[in-house]
Length: 175
Image (cartoon, rainbow, N blue to C red; front, side):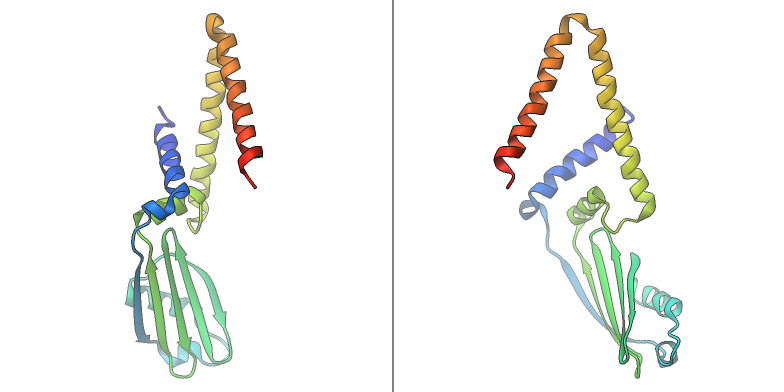
């Protein structure tokens, strides 16, 4: 029962990932214009932390910074999270910026969590621990089957058949 939530989550999101065209909702895209103090982005040293925090606090941006690029005439900052992206382009001379925030909805969030995309190291640990739980559940099923003398042969035969069917599906249908 410890693994129930994990099995349910990864099973349900496996279905939503396979049929994204049926489950994904409408993206919400918001365009925002604003201003940062030109001194933060002009000169040799760009105040990256201040710029990121200003964008977060002013516009409600979340997600981890995935890229902060500094070119001669502009800076770009990208934020990523499960089912979320925000990209800001800042003019280094004037400090004016254009920000595009994209929210992809609940199904996109859980699909990204399933894949571990843009979800951080802590969530990667959750995925790894979930995989360990699922391996333990599988092994415990095999061990229990070993003690059920009357059902042992049938159980192992069905298990082998499942492996063979999965392999054949791969060989036949996967290009």
